[in-house]
Amino acid sequence: MRLLDDIIGKEVLDNTASVMGKVKDIELDTSSNKLESIIVTKGGISESIGISKNEIIVPFEMIKRVGDKILLKKTIDDAEIMVEELENDL
Image (cartoon, rainbow, N blue to C red; front, side):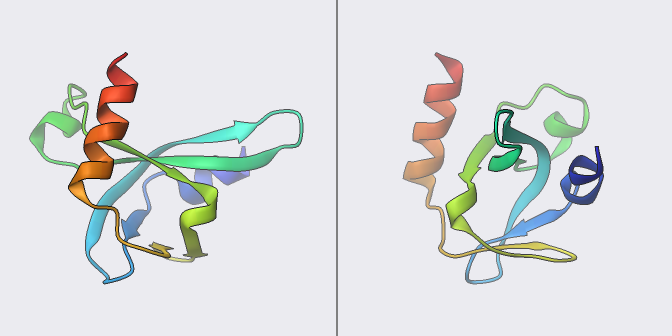
């Protein structure tokens, strides 16, 4: 799928140009083929060997621009990240 090839692996930056991580996967609405969210990993050694749970789910509405990198409309703070991680563990 072309969308996967274009987005997977891109760096994700918040609105202050701080690197959030890289796109690991995407979530699509299969009925409409619309992008719902991207799944971003924070990186590090644990991510490179596949044992990291540091994933952030970024809704499509938070994406400002997709180019060489993905720019978000606002900063995602650690409290929001922790909520996403807890929801993913359930």
